[in-house]
Image (cartoon, rainbow, N blue to C red; front, side):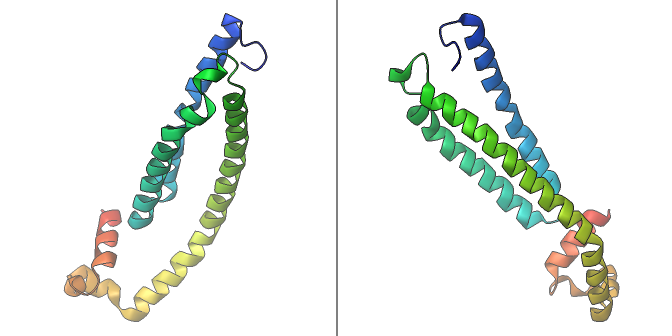
Length: 147
């Protein structure tokens, strides 16, 4: 729309690409759900925060960047959308880097967790159901993912 705001085919293509960009939001939610799969509390906080931030931004984005007095160029909106797309690319790269780093660290964390579990003798008590009142988080997560 920045190139030719008065040409119907350009406006249609720009509007179509803008609409397709919202499809990325579903991908981000699925990705966050996948990355946080092993920690229920983290997943709840991350997904709720993403939803809240998305709604908060959508509440003022159109008013601020796509005001009626900027028709048909929408210069502020177009520049804001380009900046957001570029920033999203960098954020995706950072998230992917952190995800790969955590996946490489996972075997070490699992080994340490297994040793701690053996030292505390929780494996037997969890299987027998003894420490249900004392360790509800460990029991619920272990039984949730082991089935």
